Length: 230
Image (cartoon, rainbow, N blue to C red; front, side, top):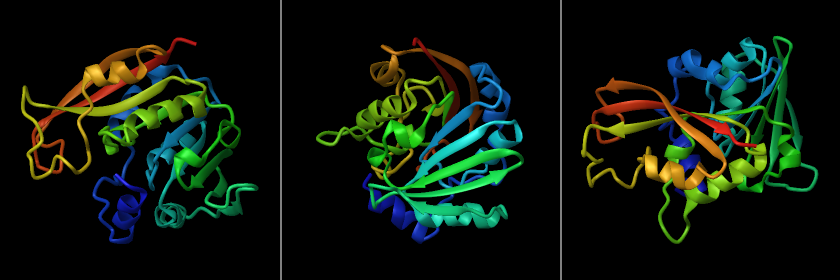
């Protein structure tokens, strides 16, 4: 998936993945990470997710990154938040939107996650990956998903993660007509390839649903904790 793919999706309002309420699996399972009170949560590829407001309501600071400035502008407008906007001091492709809400700090970088540095992100206590990993293919020569996981660990200093993913029923796979569209299946073996060296990977919940893909395939929504071995 190129950056242009996602920017075009927001320009054309092709964003059915956006939820109007906090994700129930987040609400039920984030406590499994034991994130310290007043900790900082990193939300990669955050879009305009209201999950970020849930973190704030729980007493966490939030830092996100999103390619589409349209998404970020909509997020602040739809939630009546006044943002301070500033350019990155050395990287013109990055813009920071920041607001204070309910005593917590919310910061979203607009730009490519690969352009960010750990200094830009700061200390991270937990990562919430709802739709980032499954949004990225891992085909050669780009190996985008592998690059993303390595970048995420570098930015967060391998902070523990709550990862939402999915599986198909049995051996069922996404139909040929949709296999090149997100969300992309991430198998357990792939997850271990990306993360097992640095994390304990635990499947803590699964929920049967009628569809998990753009093709309408049925399957399971999955919740993993990735507990840092640091």
